[in-house]
Image (cartoon, rainbow, N blue to C red; front, side):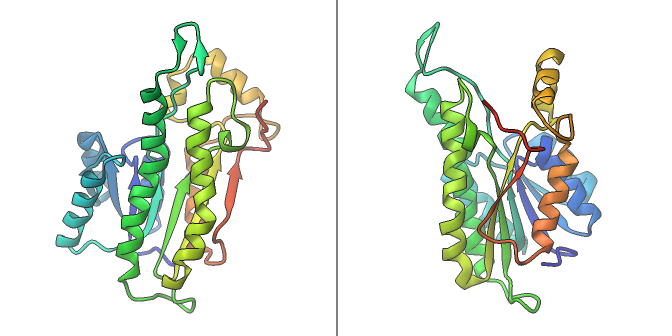
Length: 252
């Protein structure tokens, strides 16, 4: 799909990989729409890019539905949706403080898995009503963000791995179901990425994580995520698949 001149929705778009993807797609001629709980930061970035921003909690159905309704009133019709919104808390099932509270597990599932599905369902509904584009009669592309923790979760990642494993698992059935509308669904599973969340960790922790990457021997750059997302958008034959972006990392 040629994204030039088309709207691309990015959740978690105010920071990290989402913000970088927004900048990259704007450079490629797309018009961006940012969803983020931090409306002030999202608005500041969107205005600098000539885009739009909405204060959205992806885990809340009413919040997402309201934002899509507002987009419709502004004649914003998205052709691409990149789901970057997520949280990554670490907590043991049974730790020094006792058993993990169920609400802690539930919160991660609500944001990472249900939040991804929540936006995906609304994006697919909007895209299904659009006119097909190009020689493949494509209407849209949805890119979900998982993690290599979906495959090799570490201690303390039971909730996070479960949420990202769910994102991986729903990709193929979603792609099969939405194929009749000409909508593709892809999943990116990043490894260790140099995001603001990562920058908040002690340097020794960052160095240890980078040392686990066989090659290149460093953390991934958010720009590399953005480049991959853009290629997926442009390459219509990519559908129903998970692409690991981890430098051959296999967590143990």
